[in-house]
Image 1: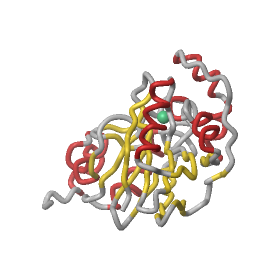
Image 2: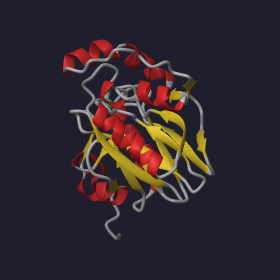
Image 3: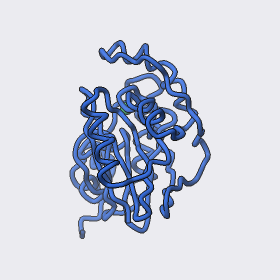
Image 4: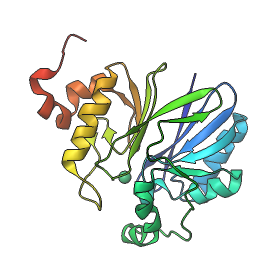
Length: 223
Ligand SMILES: [Zn+2]
């Protein structure tokens, strides 16, 4: 059974996620902490819950999702995993960050390339890696089928989708990713996005305007 902790981080209100299971091992997804207070919120939670971080993982390489990656790498001595197709975003984080007023001193080294890797493991948990290009070329979602738990990053939000006007973004790709790979996971699937409230696939099938616009009559309203 996975436990999810959300630490809302940085001026972009990005969701830094800690996923843990009964073994006490955890992974830190999209570490976006930007100040000492946000760093402390993370380390305090991990200490109080007696967790052992084993990996930093990113759904994608955008600067608001990686501001705290160096901190967790240094604090816990853990590797950083990312789909290599988003390496260019990590490398350009100091430049991109400056546009939004973020100061990025050091770019974290990517230790594990997740491109083409089917699963990710921690503790007794196996997460499926679902490639969902569109918001960025190397965007991935993470899925645990038994618990029907999904991490969607900036691909799918509650009643919205990630923007596609940034470098490497593509609207037709993000829609294909959502419609072909996320919606078929089923109405009961509970997801945690990179910004804002958690939701379910069933809720999005009914209320996400980007989804309903294209799904139209295909939606099954029996649920
Ligand atoms: Zn993003």
